[in-house]
Image (cartoon, rainbow, N blue to C red):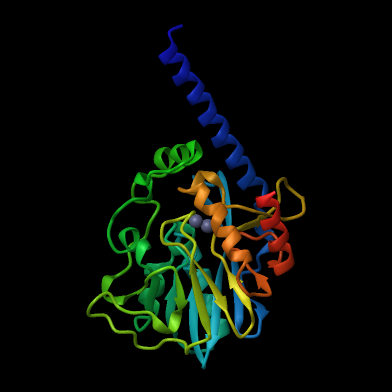
Length: 305
Ligand SMILES: [Zn+2]
Ligand SMILES: [Zn+2]
């Protein structure tokens, strides 16, 4: 056999193996019964709601958390759930129960992947006064129609998953440009968020409430958030806390290579997060109830070993 076809065959087998492994891992981590659909209190003024997104025709379940923060009597949603009408319904019902007639003021997105931005259209419709906050480097995917598929990814797994399996319009949900507010630079305070030109913030949490850190390895504009009053970190997908096999204990890991465009940067992001002040971090994909500062420190040390 000439060399070219041999290499192609090897790549094909590798792609199939990677796909099977990641699918298996996601499936093993899926336990639909563990979510009761209500928001759960994590700390004073911090809640989360879990949802299982059954996608790829029900073959694969992705468990994902959405977070809610209350500041000065106003509500901030962090991430917008999975892209199904059921997810939107569950999220709106959960919000109604916690907010008791209040409206959402801000919707913040850690990044634009569909398990984090899916119910955005339904939320914007239900809360027409809410503005949507995300990092400027996520804007091409959320405001424009650029696809995550075309990023210069550093892993074969990403090329297999996002480029081959994910359809063109399935990996992003566009935000109405008139409602967008952008985080700019490497880190800051959500109190300082600005337009694009023409969009003024109607309300922002006061200085010292919500800090953000750019962690672009998993998605170019991904941010981690720290709620200062409770020292709670919401790292998005910068770290995961899932079990290696069904029934196993949750372990901290870097985000899956199949959905992470820059794995070298993702490793640096995890080290950066471990260096920040917080007491407990709540990843979006979490089989437990978050991870302590000491646990993230130990994970960071293991990455450097
Ligand atoms: Zn993601
Ligand atoms: Zn995710």
